[in-house]
Length: 218
Image (cartoon, rainbow, N blue to C red; front, top):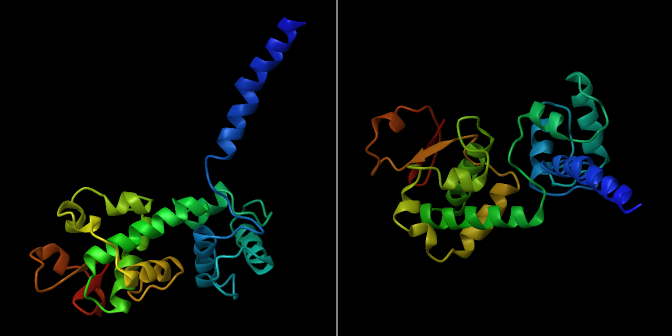
């Protein structure tokens, strides 16, 4: 009998537990979900004319119906749940609804804004935060906030230690605004100060906005 129970236990360890780990390895959104991933789903569905509700980060009935329409038009199983395949089809990677993860991302973006945009207008601070989030979504950059901020050679504030200075209150608010979907840049993935920039390459990028001392480009 003891040998029988050991066999059953081994079966559970080998098959059932790995399945559970696999299913939790990615974050999905469904009715009742809240957070950054839901906001991004709503933003994209609204852009593609599937969704006409508020971008509030709350996965309600309107969001679910919009997801179902998207799934049907893209030959996906239309269950109204944004699982791995649906998120991939939307091009959403690296964003989670997990509160601890979201808070960590917001805090890091705030520290970055405070270091890179201290002295800029509030709009200019939100714009710098938006660039980080636009890079997370872009295929050419890491798909997490920390990956973008700490990407090798990307930002001087990481190497000169400015990112470790106390975070301003305005930067904290600006980070939250950026995460909630405000992008004053119109989708920029680069920015620079024309008074200090030495790279001819960055100056050759298509300009989409000029806000304060920063030029924003793609």
